[in-house]
Length: 411
Ligand code: NIG
Ligand code: FE
Image 1 (cartoon, rainbow, N blue to C red):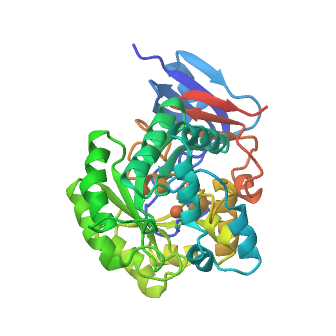
Image 2: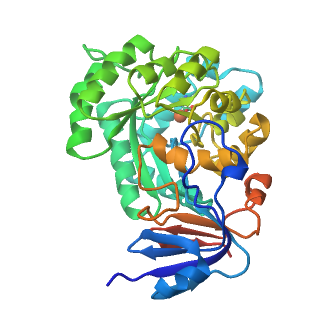
Image 3: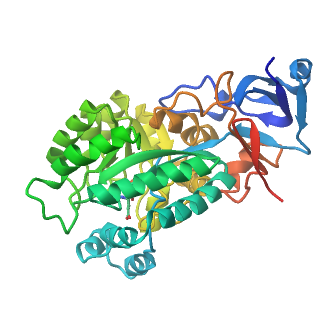
């Protein structure tokens, strides 16, 4: 017989269930179970309800002390936490008035991190991933996407993706790997064919045979790849069965149209999206992903989250944690700040880092607390869920649970 473990009671349990994937959300739409409990069986949610009602079905009870609010574990659908070195120099240069693209042209930027990442061994990269991922977990994230993209050769991209795969085996948080070999054109490329052709013919088969990822990303931008260059790349990626995701409209519009054309799972950044791109995204199934950490790191405007939602988009919010544009890496802080600037409801902010973010990763087993979903959740010491965004990330989780097991408890 399955062991049913009852966890609770929670003053407020927010399952984030039954909400629309697309469009605006009001706080009044949020289902709240008062004095709630979660019945867990074999790592999955068997039932949610009031603690009292569930006691009869429990073989074991894990009592939660004091007043705590429970939310689904956060899903951070866009990070680059596999890297070597630092880009503090870039940050200082930007704050002295040099632009991100100017720094990239003069040898800094992504290429600087490529150089530093190539110098690191696979096991050194694994250590960095583990340390950063552990901080994300303690901040309430239970699923974390991680991109390659600082290798920019077949060998170095494989090294990065193997490091992500190995780190994932050693961690409680789930890492979702993505191949971002199309992050920029490698400055040292000397092959006869084009760089992307080499990635298609040599890297894609390895990704499949070693099961390193099922997702392919590209940076569509003047300093990286033009829409026409990534179109044939994505066509080939889709033949291999990869999901597509795009770094789109960060400085100039263009990438989101490619994302829509290829029915990508998500188009991320969108700081430069105009009304035209916003309306096209709203008519598509592509999840629009805001990356406020990049706006905070670069000191530039936020993704027009309010307009995207009002037009009818599904809005996810991710940290973009990376050494260049988004070194902070604190999802809840960034999502809360985006909410304040863009006038987002709690439901929109919390939906953007739970069920809407899991849709951006094409994951159908997490992001809400409903029967048969993975029992991933975070608890906060408060009696009102609104305190969570109000404190803009300073109210940290008191505990984090992965597959029904407590994996973190604050002291
Ligand atoms: O999402 N925009 C491109 N890629 C990353 C930045 C990477 C870097 O600067 O190292 C991003 O912001
Ligand atoms: Fe990114």
